[in-house]
Image (tube, rainbow, N blue to C red):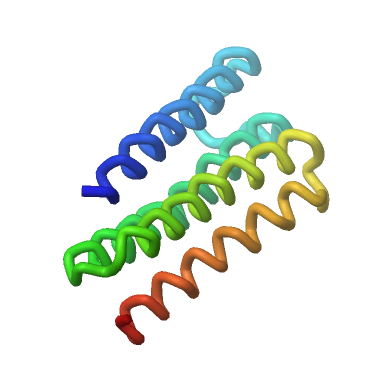
Length: 124
């Protein structure tokens, strides 16, 4: 299954983002919440944003794969998702504000969502 490959990659990314939160918690000595610490808030939101989008994207990929969508369609969704999440991470690590990488990361994520919906609604 193609989705399994991308799920594994995204799981590793998810753990990496969670460890970044833990690292900030230890560094700043904040056990619960964000302690109103900007770097911890940023790490929490990067992790949270990933957690908000990736599960739904994996569900779309899985359903499309189960409906025997073309392999290129599943790979497109996977590449858009992984690439989008990486760009989003790079963009937010560079700046808490807007950045080109963050912008294209979200465009890629939204494209994956819309392509996934289209693949399910309009099978080839």
